[in-house]
Amino acid sequence: MATSRMPYSNSQHPPRYSTLSLNSVATLPLYPAADYDIADSTLASSVQDSYRQHEYHLYQDSRPWATLRLVSKSTSKSNCPRYITGDDVTGTVELDLPEPQAISSVKVLLKGHLVTSSLSTDTFQFVEHSVVVWEKGHAMNQGKAPESTSNGKLHGRFEWPFSFPFPTEYPRHGPSKSKGSSSIESTTDTIPTPQTLIEKTANIAVVYEVVLRIVSGVFRRRYKLHVDVLYVPAIRSLPMSTSRKDAYLRGAHLPGPVEDMEGWTEVPSARFTLVRRQVETGASARSGLIAVPVNCQLYIAHPAAYAKGTTIPCYLVCTSDSDEIDLVKDFTTRQCLAMELRQSWIYTRDAQHARSVDVPEITRSGKANPNVNQVVARVGEAVWWTPVHGGYADRRRGVETRLEGEIHLERDLFPSCETSFLCVQYNISIALRDSQDFVVKNIETSEGVSSSTATSNRTCLGTYPVKITTLGHMDDPLPTCFTPRHAGRRSRKGYEQISDVHFLSASPLDVR
Image 1 (tube, rainbow, N blue to C red):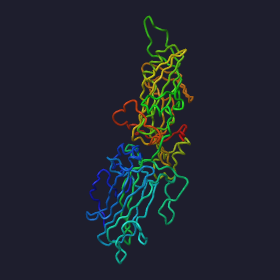
Image 2 (spheres, rainbow, N blue to C red; image 1 turned 120 degrees about the vertical axis):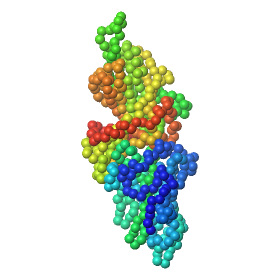
Image 3 (cartoon, rainbow, N blue to C red; image 1 turned 45 degrees about the vertical axis):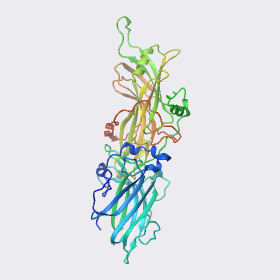
Image 4 (tube, rainbow, N blue to C red; image 1 turned 180 degrees about the vertical axis):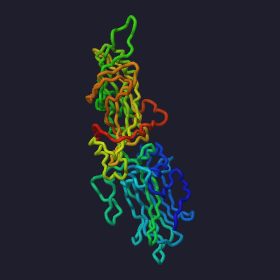
């Protein structure tokens, strides 16, 4: 029996008949953002409606003789099987054998691979789970039994169901098998299974496949059908504060740090002296430049874990004891202080080292490693506006200015992740924006960083780690966006900057 690749009706996601490499992964289409959005799929009311059946075939002489059917929670516009944490890989295998065939076994396997180069050898299989659908010599009680000839060959048409949980964890150093066993050995050193990753601008991919494997004949010839599937982990944020939840339910603006102390986290603040470049002339001319001390306190919503597709609420408070009230107001309203969301990919450069390289351990040690790459990109920036209750407040001495803001999170943003071969981290970065009007000197942040600089180039004042999840807390309302999202997708230019990892410090965020 020979197999040949035949035209497949689902041209967007056809089955594969070859080994994995970055070249083969590059032929796969990028999954649309809607496929990564699992919020609706987790609602009880939409569970039944979201199940879809996908069908794949092995052919002989233009006739399908083996059929693999998969049932999964896919979007209405998706032709690819999709699985979420807690889902079962469910389906059926159908064989149609018009002639007697010496079938030895029929198995369904779920595999997870790390791919790092165009060579098929540069892959690391970190997940494998197999189910025996039928095996010669074993009585099978499920499905329609095939007809058996006198010489032990199989003849006829039959169908067997199968179902097993999608693996949500994997052994730290990949699957290991006991002799004579097809299942993964249990181990306490496990890591959460990462989301499917296909980034055409980064030299790394994490792919999952369901494989139908049929062994036939005296020489145990193997027939395989590979189906790429999408996996999205269900990672939930912690519950928001009562005051913030109430504001979202009422459609009101969020209470600030003073009104809702439990609902905000202070990120690195900045203290510096502010000087206006342009000095008034004529009758109002002053001798020299006036340096005004300014203290800027920045806040993000607490807890610091946010579901992709929503927003990160931000708040800025600038205070000064100086009488130069207009100077402080101008600095605030011109938004010279920028708050950005930066994404950092840290991953093993070579899949062959995935068993020996522990990326999280490298990041914590601060040591450079030639087998590890780092890619950093800006994936969001705060949009600011004056709070509805006013952005200025007179003090007994000086002035206080306030801005409210938010950072939009894309729906297909990769969630925070920490595996043995891949870490995806997010940080809020505080920076001075370019300005022709002001000079900032003696910068000092709450992290103890001091310097003297002009704002001719954007200057980073400090960072704060945050976590990106795939789902909000089940008891929280959907966060309200107060500003429109930018048209088009985010720029991916930052992904082209790849370098060895050199860590100065590690400050992981514990959101438990």
